[in-house]
Length: 322
Image (cartoon, rainbow, N blue to C red; front, side, top):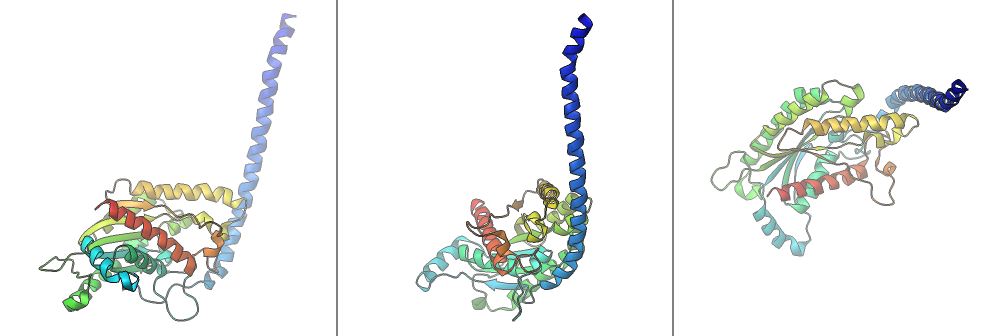
């Protein structure tokens, strides 16, 4: 009888253990099945992307320009004089992949300037004043290519801006009285750099992404003159309409968030670098409305919406540091 009592006491734990073992085995089987389906979906998307990518083209217009504030005529003179007095001229530089070259924003018709850099400059000029901007966008580039090819091109852009401004008469320079050398009545500009990268590294699962990105950020910090800040916009890759497939998204979403965390860790040791959060869509507007025909890149409205948020965040950071 004591032996039988002992068996009765052990029986419930044994049953519970068998129950959890069944649950674990079933969960593992379902996870494996979902993973195999997700891999098949990812492979199918690669084939589909080869066709869809032809539906969106990069911007064919200028990759540099000068943007002024869009104030009302009655307020222009007063606002212009006060804001220009409080703020030094700003040189806004962009380096990045297809999001900087403007893939998805070039509609059929006249060439348009690089969508994201130009729109950020426009919205930032409304808040600060006249801004000179220049951009280097390389479609499909990862951090390694941006360092090897994009960074030298950006240095050339900076030299071109300096040479162009030096050829202008003082009256033509306006608020952007800029050479990187400060002399006499000229004022050296504050240099703001925006680096858009990481998507193509994720697509190729490049190892060492964090270290390469950190080195590029440090190189950009010593690019020209006084670099006030280097901003890295966060990119919500998993929100693209092309990737809204289940169970693929269940695996893709945490991977994308981990990849963006690598971006934050890369700049954690850099004093003048910061990651800017990706904005939430306006109330009542679906994210799909901001994407182009290739279902991966923003359209013209999407770039403008993103640029407005970036301009707000950059203006806030500049104001806090003054």
